[in-house]
Length: 334
Image (cartoon, rainbow, N blue to C red):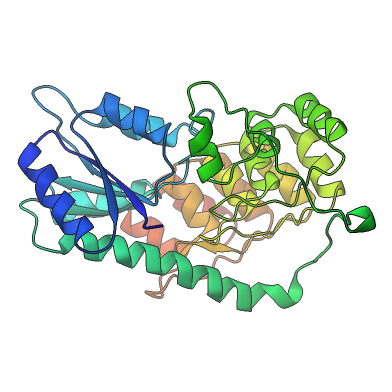
């Protein structure tokens, strides 16, 4: 099955151009000419990437769509979807600012578009995700606790009936590999999770979504600490990585949930991991969450970790003029 790519632009000619580009390179574009249709598609399909225009007509922008994608309380199918922003108004300065301020924006491309420009960028994103998963597997697998739930008498897990949160397509949830247990973890409904497990003794908490996320990833987003503790006691690995190299602690950071970050760290979550070449200190600064940034400093995150360009968090903060965060580094003698 080819990767589905959401394309949002109010210009039909540009939609047609992108459609041909992506299709001719083995990708499956789903085209939307307005924000409302795009949100509907996000509730009905699991995507690998989104290409989004900034200006969507007179006095209209794609801001509502971006907010929906960032909404960790409702966007269960695509809550960590990489975005490519396209616009005739993109400058080098604007591109740098957009990419540095939002971890989900991986690139910003100026119109007019060139042949194969977007398909090439999308393939780079998809390839990078696969390479990151393989690299992290080699780095961390020897050190990970492989504890898991043992099924008695060799019974295999029975499939879970999806009951998606309101507005989400049942088949889309199944396509994304999100079962009922993951859904309850995402909504933080501990009672519903327990009821589901009691109803079906063979239900498996070990299942993974198409993106490689476990119930613990969804639980970290859901914010219910009691539910998360149950998952950990049940044998789920607190440092398990999905196909993008994201761990449950990263999900808590992106949900802006300080207390969940504190809780996961107290349970043994790694603090020196990197996602998309950013350390957790960089990620916290990117989403402008000073409390989580300060928490990682208190927990002794290595400030000398670098990205592929050799930049430490201090250089990253200086380049992006994050003065408050730089003051925090100085406070800790960094």
